[in-house]
Structures are given as C-alpha cells and as structure tokens.
Image (cartoon, rainbow, N blue to C red):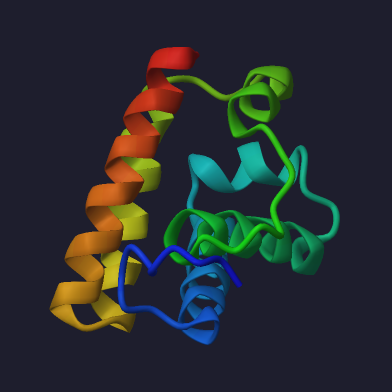
Length: 121
C-alpha cells in the first residue's frame, strides 16, 4: 500500500464492482461492444487489469503496469469521439453503484483521464 492517502473514499471491492458492471454494459452497447470484442478475448483478465489501473489512480496501489494511450492507439479502431460514449456509460454505472460523493469524484477523475486519452488519439 502507498503512503499517499486515497484520492477518493473507495475500497478495492467497490472499484472491482464498478469495473465489472461497466464492462457488462459495454459488451451490450451497439457502438462500443464490437470495438472491445475485437480486442478483448479474456474479459476477467481485462477487467482485472482495468481495476488495477483504477486502484493505482485512486488508491495509489502500484499493481498496474501499462500505457493506456499506447494500447488505445495500437488498437486501430478506437476513435476520439468514442470517449464521450464511454464516459457517459461509465458515469451511469458510477451513479448507480456508488454514493453521490464517490460517483462525483471518480467521474471527475475519469473525465480528466478521458480528455487526455482523447487528445492523445
């Protein structure tokens, strides 16, 4: 565990629950589902990696080793406008699964990261 305090009052279990719920929604989405399906063959592994990313960003855990921008660029079928859809779906899950304070804080962080990724593409 890091010496830094968490950015938000979230537990690893809450992070995992949001990630799992979110990707269940994504898989059913007519626009994003096929984009993810073209690259993700092991959903539990993908969700674990994304949960590690968020635990790093929120709880300062050091279990994530990746480069989200490079991965999204290398995918070849990810377009900047898709991030607005992604964020809208993510926000809906946050507000359903978490307290308003948790949802608002995580949403703000996700929007900052999403803007950086969108700009990087």
